[in-house]
Image 1 (cartoon, rainbow, N blue to C red):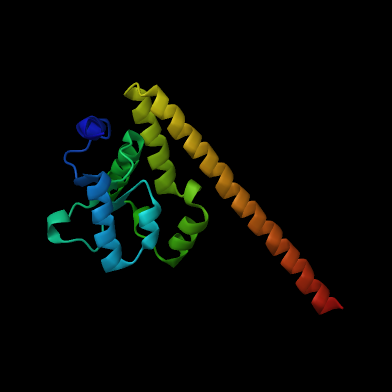
Image 2: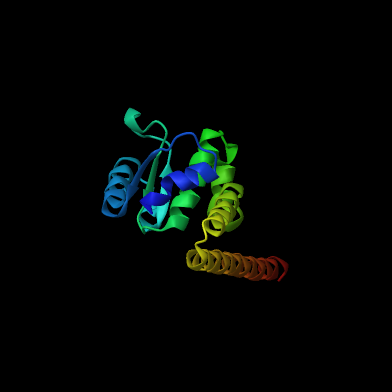
Length: 168
């Protein structure tokens, strides 16, 4: 994974890289960050790019890759590039947080990261990892849409029940 850092940086036209941690070092960084800032969901991820509430030594952010996957590294480096380009999608207000939490799979910064990482895997000739990453994207998209569909069905049922209570 580490030998792909510069290749991905070149692919994304990045001039420099943030601090990048792998495996147990990445898990330790995440634990330290979560203890200080909350955000426990970070502990469940394969990787993440952290860009706020960090010591000065990490002013460009930190990437943590816990699963030693080139696809995860590429995905998180896309987020680093978005941060360097000041993407407004990375700075979330309440509405964007709600959008992100309910529509993660179609959130603009995530879509860009998923599909750019896939392009890198293809360009690097990593066919097996590209197939696995593509399958991950497809299954995640199906799961999220199933969750949204169930949520809509529940809302419809609750609305019908409420109407029945009001009307009868």
